[in-house]
Amino acid sequence: MAFIPGPNYREMLHPETLPESVRRQAAAAGANELDPANLFNIAWRGPDSAVRSIALPRELTGVEANILVLVGRWFPSGSHKVGPAYCTLVEGELAGEIQPGLSRIIGPSTGNFGIGTAYVSKLKGYPATVIMPEGMSAERYARIRRYGGELDLTPGSESDVILVLERTEAYKKDPRNKILAQFELLPNYRFHRYVTGRSAIEAAAAHGNGRIAAFVAAPGSAGTLAAGDEIKARFPDAAVCALEPKECSTLFNCGRGTHRIEGIGDKMVTLIHNVLTTDYVGLIHDDDCVMGLELLERRRPLLERMLGVPAGAWSGLAGLFGVSGICNLLGAVRMARFLKLGAGDNVVTIATDGFDRYPSVLANLAERVGPVTEALLEEWFETIFRQWSAEEILDVRPREQKQRLFGYKEDVWTPFGYSRPYLERMQSQSFWDGEAEKIHEIDAAVARARG
Image (cartoon, rainbow, N blue to C red; front, side, top):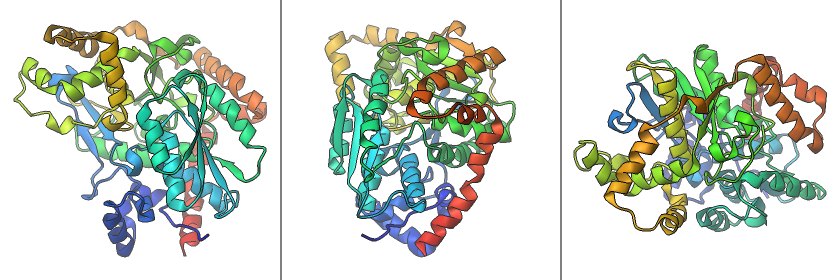
């Protein structure tokens, strides 16, 4: 089986630098989802080379600051998680650990990374197995199967991802199995620090004062939070806020519990989470996100009428958000209020995927709440988009909070074979900067492999 080429990090950030022939192939491939040339479409940018992002209407957010959202649904496979999956697989190929015709790809996930694993494996010609909890949305499973991935389901839901990690250990016994370990391996960090972080900086340059005052994202693997490292390198005063479900407030106060925000809140500090650059942890009620999605996706005409917006003015928001995207939206709004940001300030967040993965989640909401009146929907809006509590935002900059988070990380990862000296190295920013610097040599290796 031949090596299937794809982009390097720089080309994912700037696909316009690809050779003209490759760009033509990638553009033509968009109509055929399973054309391997779609690997060259892994980028935050659209055909016009602009970063795909939106500034949310102030009538919706209720704050003066600009709430800017990078939109992930336009990535191949429908989520930006395909980027880390691709990078992890390619770095494994470059190291000789993943070989065409010999290796099976294993993707531990709660959904979007697993979809990305199945998708990239399909395009590059590898069989794939995705390990994930049995309580995720039906659309996730269907998409993985559509890409030819096999499913190995573990008990529980989002908050039981530790069982996914334990199941993954069994796959390591067969040397043909190669784990795309998103919670542990640094390609996930590299993709988001370099590609997502720099894309966020570029998107913000066109708004307000051109700077980023805060970056807000909910960690699943915590890969997306790595964008905060790049943002802080450019804007040292920028605040980075990690969000988690109020029902599973592990980073906030050691809380445990189940919740409905798929893709985040995994009862751990992941190995690749650089807690040094996380300034705040914010709590979001899980059903606020589900009901918020109902409002924004299916009740937009009501919102437009209620807020005095011309009918159809928000039609461009259709399909752009999933449940975790609404979580990030709400967290960004609440951080803008918490930090008392003004009209020139920019808060950047992420919509990881789109609505296509969540019709079954809203069907479940309908079963749980029954008939919904307009008065109830208006009450939902006031509760979800206008109410907030500063007590649900925790400052984790003090040393004792950093040590607490490092302690969590050690508790989770030493049983999986990571040494204390390695974990202690992660307590220095030089560790993370060194990992980012590897991008240059990796990019050169990808270019050589392509020939």
